[in-house]
Length: 243
Image 1 (cartoon, one colour):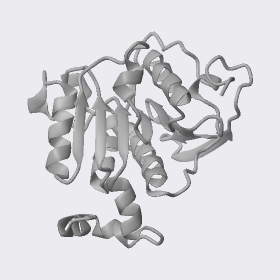
Image 2 (image 1 turned 180 degrees about the vertical axis):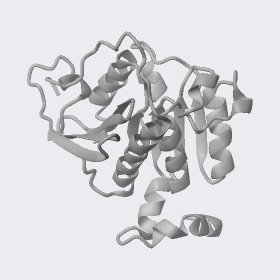
Image 3 (image 1 turned 135 degrees about the horizontal axis):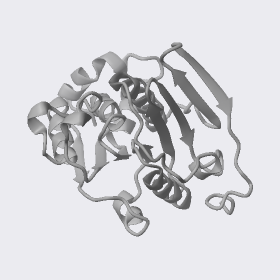
């Protein structure tokens, strides 16, 4: 049941056609695992919290550095040196006191990922390295948990919604090797793509069909245009071929 204050908090979205209290209660009862609280994680987490996702698990082991602050809008200058998950939890609890934010202060590895991720309703990839992305992809496939993937560089980004065997997994189309250098990123680029991740996740949790199954959406901020391509399962994929 939604509290009276919650009905007021979410009133501007409760009136969306086919939304109402039933969809809002689904969000309240949802559990989301967000890997990363940086450039992508900042808008994702803000909008999940603002939308009323009941339980948000945030996983990150980094501390805040001054170079993060052009894009990692969850965090503040005065929090430099703090653990990102602690800063994120504080910001989200200040925004919405009706949700539960659970910080996980660990690095995801092949050995611990299954126990750390658990059994959420959805996983959101807000990471900045390919190795960790492929670790959470494997858990997504093994546990049949939907995964919203995104990546950004400069003024460009990409996003897709994966849920094998209905869709490819990340390993079907993304290399395992990370670039040698971390990409330069305009902060607003992460804002655009992270916001799209939040929309896809919220739609799924509220009972609406995700729009990016079997599609990889690209955004070019210089040209200010979107394009998408169809993506298919790789029948020889070492991760999802047996699922």
